[in-house]
Length: 123
Image 1 (tube, rainbow, N blue to C red):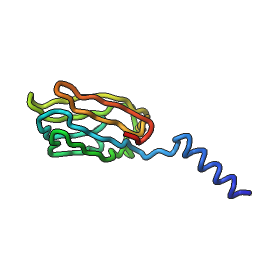
Image 2 (image 1 turned 120 degrees about the vertical axis):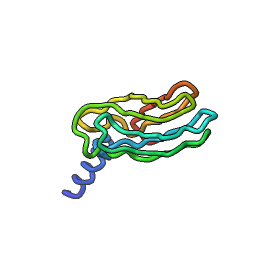
Image 3 (image 1 turned 135 degrees about the vertical axis):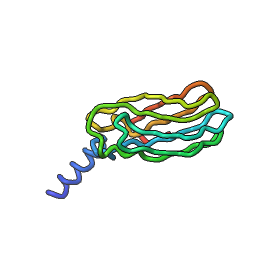
Image 4 (image 1 turned 90 degrees about the horizontal axis):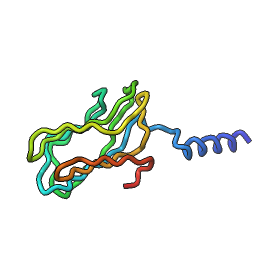
């Protein structure tokens, strides 16, 4: 009986998405016709940072940004260099050091960066 209660509790917490990875999965897609360089993805607390030297046109990269050391509210930041120089774009929100979503899709467009946040890891 105790095992059944344990299984039900585990399934409940997993199903309600209360099991936190202490971070956010991300995928970056270069939808431009130029290489993007010096890419950095981090939170406004700047405790962990993902670095990618370059992302070729039509290519993508994905990884996980750990937020296990984050403690306060903040946003996500992406820095990169494109044909017009260095860019810094801040977007999204996390609270008390925890991501509200599981995945962010970051799409580099010709003149902008699009962030799409989702609660599931489906692209």
